[in-house]
Image (tube, rainbow, N blue to C red; front, side, top):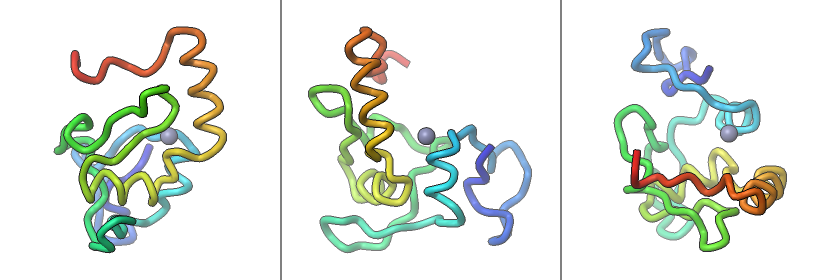
Length: 108
Ligand SMILES: [Zn+2]
């Protein structure tokens, strides 16, 4: 369970501030709430899965193994949470081979 706004920074335990995250993402995110877009260098808030649309900020790579950022927020969040770390990419490659991935993000 991740606090979108860390409790150390005034975040609450209200549902609106909580999000399910795997250990890899949660550890990578730590107390970060913003990060630099690697392209523009702009400091932007991290993607908020409760308030923002995944498909507006991200897209799957053609082979389904990597998440690509479409916006500064998307790109910065990929860096901050290390969303394309080697473990995740290898796991996704197996999911793709099994036909389980990527999810159809446009139907949800
Ligand atoms: Zn994760």
